[in-house]
Length: 175
Image (tube, rainbow, N blue to C red; front, side):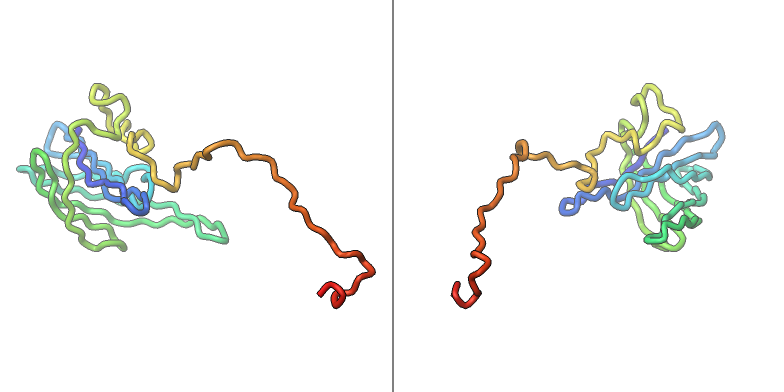
């Protein structure tokens, strides 16, 4: 299995952005792949894709099923999007076109091959297709998920001294 990626952490927002593509070559020219889409944070389960790898030309496609929650009603909806990747596969890069229906109709992508797949459990000694998952990533979390640490314990609150005028004094007498 080979993992290609262009994922990065945005400097200003701390968001995780980009794509990971894990490709498993089968005995024939067919391939199975998982595409992870990062739009700010960790991706859900990978999008299963299947297709062919012939003469270093990759063509995979599948359906992305997204379970979304509408707010404030908290109603759950399901969106299905067609996903297709057609790319040239080199020893260190994958370059081609990514199509996600309803999002970016055709986007040019360039993904770098990863020597040690970041998303696989157990490192390269136990590579399994089902082991590829973003929750196992050793990437830095986004700022939205990092809890701030306080410098020290919070002290007790102190009452503020206030003096009230006597009740039989009018406002004009105070001024």
